[in-house]
Image (cartoon, rainbow, N blue to C red):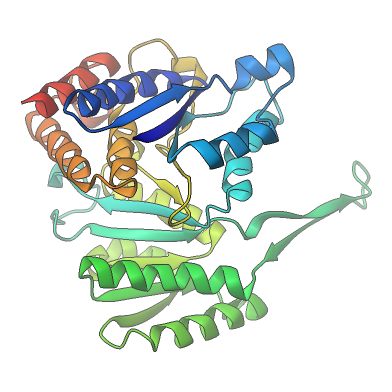
Amino acid sequence: MKKIAVIPGDGIGIDVTDEALKVFEVIKSSGTVIDWDIFDYGADKYLETGITLPDEEVENFRNNYDAIYIGAVGDPRVPDMRHAKDILLGLRFKLDLFINYRPVKLYIEELCPLKNKTMQDIDFVVFRENTEGLYAGTGGILKKGTPDEVAIQTSVNTRKGVERIIRYGFEYAEKTGRKRVTMSDKSNAMRYEGDLWQRAFEEVSAEYPDIEAQHWYIDALLMQMVKRPEQFEVIVTCNMFGDIATDLGAQLAGGMGLAASGNIHPGKTSLFEPVHGSAPKYHGKDIANPLAAILTVGVMMEHIGYPEWNRKIEDAVLEAVKTKNVPRDLGGPLGTKASGDYIVEQLSK
């Protein structure tokens, strides 16, 4: 039995999670042994009780669940977004989910904003280091509110953290038959951080002589992603650069409505989420695109040992895109619920 903790979250996170749960039901009814529990952590709970995500719940997830599925968190009623930070970043850091996995896959040419690019041209993955860098929360503000105010944000990079995300990129390439790993940094300007990333990349890549090791500075990488995305197979980079590059990748593949992700620690409880925001003003209006949430179910199922479901879900989404049985942001006529129902229909055939 594989157990999944589900956190619908806020805004359209709730709407798209409802559609993802329809897919859960199809998977379970097929005989795949999964079960799930729903946890109501989000803005409503925080505003009512002051509870974001207790440490004991994190331990519950760690010890009793194979995966965590989350819709989206964020609500303007909580101006500092404390609940979202505690839930999403809290889980990433406390569970040491050092791999942010973002597949970038074009399902049909007309969704790509670049001219003359095919599905074969845009099919790569990005591994973003997920627990260090500028997002580690190191820094502070001095003399706040005065003309002499100073804000300091420090990027934290450890040899362990850098090496393990680079190594995972090469392991993934080897396992999936990909032939090139590209590391991106800004070592021409950020010399200390860059020195560590460069040395780790050189040393790890030497262990994989059959895989080409390529390097681009982050600004050049982004330009190349637009100019010639077909050259990329596996990209590995730091937390902030990965955050930026993966959103560009999502747009190349048709937009945030198709962007799935995993926050992974191999062999341990990991977290899976569509990467779009919570957009509370659209909650309950049946206009949110649930396809990223549904594709995220596939990524999660592959991680917990059922790769066939990832293939089936991708095939169902491909059929939806081809036949334009998709939401309005992808050029179709369907609302949130009808989009989910169409995928369920395809999976049930």
